[in-house]
Image 1 (cartoon, helix red, strand yellow):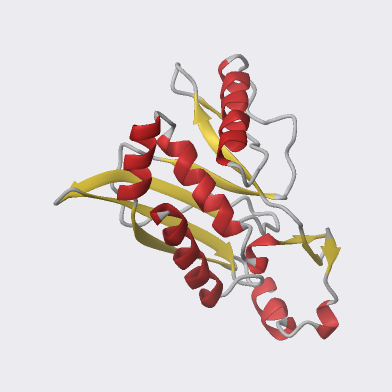
Image 2 (image 1 turned 135 degrees about the vertical axis):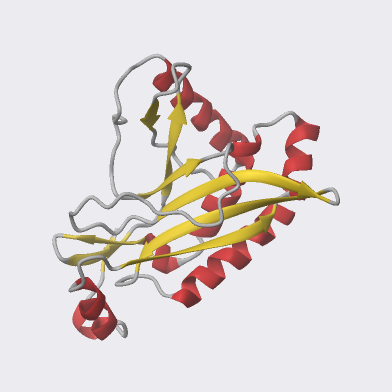
Length: 205
């Protein structure tokens, strides 16, 4: 973890401006072509959720701005960002997870399965590991949403939040909308553009 020197940061004014706002988050919802990732998952008998989440995390970890967090009014950059999706139980409640990121898809999927098993066998909401070196995300495969809003805690928050929609198929092309909400004190539209480009590239591989 690296602590940034805000006084010499080229985004000092932007950081101070947006940090003073009651709600400094902005959100965009972007359609992604998930056809190749979906077909790969079916062919290899892998979790499609796990596949696209891994592709997402690869993109997140390639963008410095999405690795920044605010801790005690300081800006820190984590070396690695992990995934913290909500995972549903059989009784339709859910638990927050913490899935350790790994560049290897097979290892990442094993980490995901381990967290699924933990959540299925407990009724606790929070994971044993619950740091800020993650993204918060949820899949809503029942709803083809065009926009999305995350709950606001009222506390100083800097963790990016994502939501993945229901897949819609048209002319054999599978599309999935993805909402990403970020703190503008740390992240700009350019960074979101990079994320979209890298995520789609990963999905196409």
